[in-house]
Length: 368
Image (tube, rainbow, N blue to C red; front, top):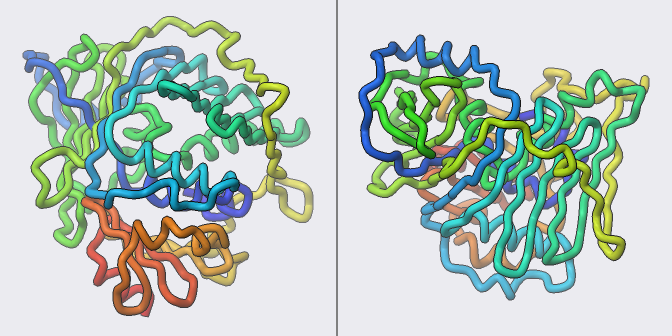
């Protein structure tokens, strides 16, 4: 996760980014099948060598993080930030279904339809749109033509930092596989079926004992190598903490019109500036992980025990002012905490925020 990008992402995405950085999801697979045996390395190569560039399908998500029950009406009525917080919390609990369309590396759309509303995340070339019909609000990121060479990377960066509930199983799997290191044991589980497809089960098990994550299982399509399902199990919890996976999938190219998003005429549109350095080039990670580096978040530790620290300067004011914070958190020594089965967040009294898939005591120690 690029720390500098937090300066220009919509402020309310920040808490959801923290969640997305350490969790992913699963959907119960169908009956077991018998595929030709493959080693973990061979399944990893199958994913790496996948040439799938177009597909569409329906994704089902079920979440059981142990979040406290909330009165979402007790937030900040009339503010887009409160609405965004409510939406993020809603999608991080219960069951949801959404559509995913991918028309190549530079075209994708995630569409969540509820009874009375629709939410969309659309990436089309140098344009990225986020739209919520319940608030009739849209955010538009337009990448300048002179920075076209970085357009795809920056658009992908934005998409990769969206809440976990707005990601496809393939995107979630990529986050885990991109960070494999010696702290993880990799094996192959029982063959299965997902969305009518035969899959290999790639199982990632943390070697560390101080993480809340018990294991991550990635269902890999045996023919195309596309991850169709991601499963995260939490320590001490029998049911999966999150479930996300395709229930149907079609590998043909979606209609191009799906990526030509135009917000309603009455919509409120926000257009955050594309970040650039003083010389006009695209902003990027300088490698300086100190809090003084522009108020950028700092990552300490390694592997599953990593902790992210967000300096007080980088924490949106709306977060501390939102009455929902009191519902979500409880007072502890040195601040307040939100504890779930996969993630712990510690809000220090000095305004800093710490988060990780670790017990609260480790976050408090990091704060000291």
